[in-house]
Length: 210
Image 1: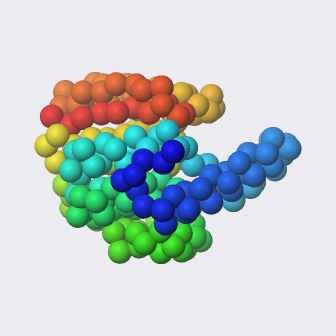
Image 2: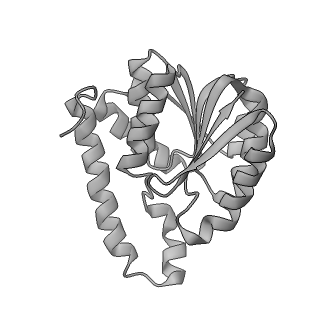
C-alpha cells in the first residue's frame, strides 16, 4: 500500500517511470558493452523506489525548503523531491546537462501536478553550481561519478547549517566504486561534515553539514 501522504497523481507518474525502468533493464541485459555505452543516455537509470522514498521523507522531516538536485536525468528522483518541496512549501532546483531529459521530466512533473515547484538549470553542473548562491537545506548528488568530488567541493560553501547531502551509487554499480570511494573519503575528511553509508537502493552516502 502506498503511503497516504503522497497523492494519486504522483503515484501514477512514479509507476510509469518504474515500468519504463523495468523495460529498459530487460533491454540493457541484451546489449553488448559498446552498444550499452552508446545508448546509456537513453536510459532512466533511476535511484529506485527505496531511495526515492527516503529522499522524500528526509526532505519533509528536515523541512528542507531549499532543495538542490545535481543530475536530474529523466526526472524520477525529481518527482520525489518536488513532492516533498510542495509539502514543505519549498522549491527544488534541478541541474541537468541534457535538454531532452529535462523536457521529458517537465512533462512528467506537469502530469503529477508538481511543475510549479521545480526550476531546471540546463548545462554543465559545475558551471551551474557556480551561479547558484545557496544556501541549500538538502542536496542530492547523482550525476557522472567522476564529478562527485568536484561537485562536493563546490557545494560545501553553499550549504545551510544542518543541511543534508545525499550521494547515490555508493555501492552499485561496481564500475562506479572507485569514484564512490573517492567521494566518501573526501566527505569524511571534511571537518564540518558527518557522514554514513546506508545500504539503501544502490547505496547512498548520507552526510550532514554542521
